[in-house]
Each structure stands twice: as structure tokens, then as C-alpha cells.
Amino acid sequence: MNSPPEPSEVFIDLGDKFLEAVSLAVGHTERDLRSYRRGHPLIVAGHSQRGLASWIHDRLWVNLAALLEGVPDVSIRDAEPNREIFVGLKYQVRLKRHNLQGGVTTYPTRTALSFLRQRQQTLDGVDQVSICAGYYWEAETRSIGEPVISLPKDRSRAVWCEVLASAEEGESGLFVLQPPPQRRPVPPMIDFPADDRSGVQEDG
Image 1 (cartoon, rainbow, N blue to C red):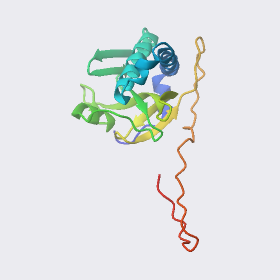
Image 2: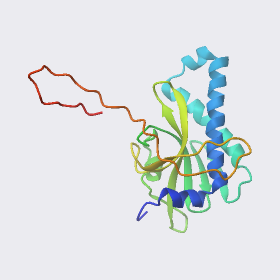
Image 3: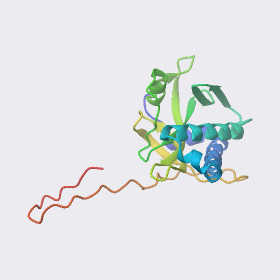
Image 4: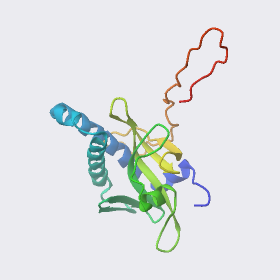
């Protein structure tokens, strides 16, 4: 990929139906998680971080696949361990949870790293654009946040990560670009004795 595409270009190419499906699927999955917690609180409490992430991923995949059924130019490949969505010939999409810096978690396999580093090609040798669709993960509360689309750079960073407008059943064409929420934690301050005027601030 010579130069990364802008969010507006990617959103136009993906189309409103795809973006709406991602937003709806995240909302459905968040409700699934709330129902799971109400019905089986001890089981949920016993999940490891990875175990809960896998449960959420399965629900998000099922919800999104159902919503994308019949959407033109969208194809789904469910061949574990890789579950991928293709939009036209240009975009390869994987479902990921994101931290507030747009980073994602994945095993560093060759295939995964090629995807995240934008080194995918079609059979014709045309560069393919890797896109991550998913949600912000609220680590402190172990809850699902806003639906997002990102253009990954590597495992810890994204070129950009954009929040999708919330969608409700029956609403269409309501997607607008929104800036990522300004919710990064404020770096803690360290107090020094009065005679130390360095004002050092700890990095976050």
C-alpha cells in the first residue's frame, strides 16, 4: 500500500449497508453480553480475559454475518482460525476489539502480521487494504464500547480509528465520520518535596 486511504474514502467504498451492519452487530453483541451476565453471572466472572474476548468475538461474528447476508459485493469466509469478510476485491476485514489507541490483540502469526502491516495481495497481485471492524474495549469495566472501523498499522497502533454512528433497527444511511472519543486516561502527577521544582510528569 503506497499511501494509506483516508477514512472518508474507505467509508464510501465499504458502503452504508456494511457500516450499518457493523454498528448494529456491535450493539447486538453488547446486549448479548449484558444478558449473559444477568443469566450466568458466576460463569462470566470465571472467564479469563482471553476467554471472555473469544466469547464476545463469536457473538459479534454471528451477529454481523447474519446482518451482512445478501449485501451486494460482500463475501464471508469462515474457516477457523481465520474468519474474514471481503468487500469487493479491495478490502479484507477482520473483527477486532480495540484499545483507545486503536491497537488490537492477535497472535503474531505470519498471516496476522501480514494483515496488520498492510501486506495482503489479491491473486492478481493487486494490493488489498486490511480493515479492522469492531469496538472499543472498556478494560476497567470489561464492557463493549463504541463501534469502530480502523486501518491498522501494526498490533499496537492504527493509522486511524473512527467511531461509527450508533444505529438502530430500521435506520439507514445515517453514518457520518466522527472523531475518536477523547477518553485517553490523564497521566498521573507525581508530587515532589517543596524544594524540588522540576515539575516532572510521569508518562502515561
